[in-house]
Amino acid sequence: MFELVAEHGPEQPSLEPLFAGLDRDPSGGNHGVRDQQNLPLASEPESVVAYLRAAADRA
Image (cartoon, rainbow, N blue to C red; front, top):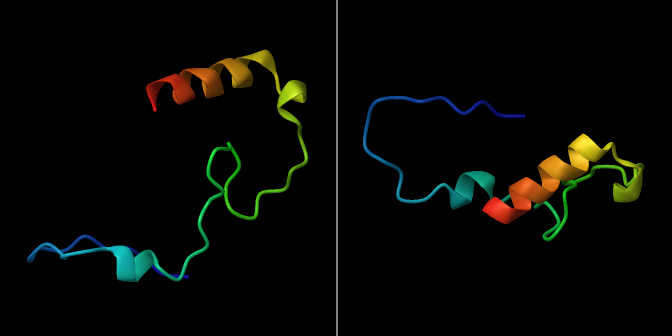
């Protein structure tokens, strides 16, 4: 585990080295890395489905 702290100073040229060792979220889905596939989208409440559709439209 690590803590990201804001400090005064020059901007880092890249944050890639900081996050390179972390697992990436699967692309094209609404689950994060290591999330269990325990609730099919069709079983989500309509409010959740509507939110996910709206978020996808903004992306």
